[in-house]
Image 1 (spheres, rainbow, N blue to C red):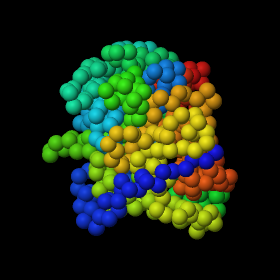
Image 2 (tube, one colour; image 1 turned 90 degrees about the vertical axis):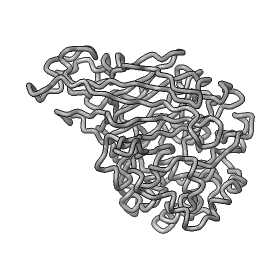
Image 3 (spheres, rainbow, N blue to C red; image 1 turned 120 degrees about the vertical axis):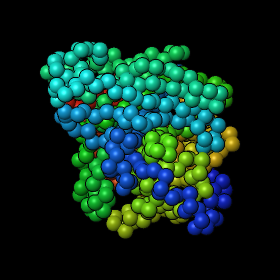
Image 4 (cartoon, one colour; image 1 turned 135 degrees about the vertical axis):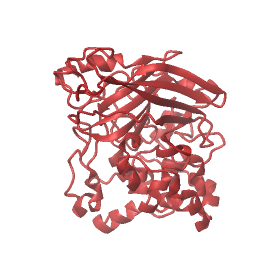
Length: 458
């Protein structure tokens, strides 16, 4: 299969590419910290505000809805008590949607949290007996949340006193954790659903990529670094019409999605975390850009010449050529501009035939290039999903949104090596971690139950 990229996409970046070093003023690091699996220096000391992954997909069992899911607090050890993992009560956690292509949020789903802590000075325990429901008196610590939907027309509270699914303490304390998870799913006005709580770390990969790209000889592969860890998830499932511009999914099917964390300080709320496409801040942005990128709104991405250059002239292909002899594609990389900054505009062969149009997930409106995850909500769920997504002809997969089973490491490595334009995959270029050790669930919120939950509950 061949996917040809529309090179006219670079025209929209002409101004950014011509900027001088003054554009670094947009990247001052005094505004905040960073996020996403500890990939930026400052976030390592603030894990509760560390946003690790964003997923967006047409719901496989409810194709008229879209599921948006974001994770925080990486590398949670399942037995990490007595203070199990919780959201920061002084922060705002956001999933943002751009539905007109201007890189500004048109819809924001925003969670804020408060603690109910009844432990006092009498015990160190999270619970003092088996917990069989979310309101069980034996549960001594719980979090509650408010979920708001924010648009330019106003603010609507969707959930006013939701309960977060507690951390999984263990089988003696929580003999039926699956029931607790189910009780933490809240209905939304208009037929949607919301969830907040602990989950299995669904991002599967071998993080030894940072050891000279898998040891300098592809010997360090096949180890799922995140296996056995948990994260804290926030998710909504809403009708696609709730997300589309003017509610018209057929005319306006493409949305951009990213998440942020706003942390309270004496100066007010400050964005300290941002995540759209996976691995951008980990392997695209340079060390000097990482902290600042997370404080930057997507609408300013195209104004930062240093950031644009990291996409049009990326580092990883040069490393692949130096270490493995895989020839780096010619620059500037218009294919990567479409994958990361504009959406894919045109397909050849299977893509054009399947979509019956010239667009996969590039917004037809007033497009401003920006890094975000993009989803075409009219692409139906695949009956037989392929882990390599669009590169393998599965149009619902990454980079058209992101599903829990998409192998984004292999997809991005192949794309960086030029597969999106050549149509050819490099067989050896893989971390050999092809799937999560726990399969996705069949219904919302889809992300698996936390590691440590008894097998018979899955």
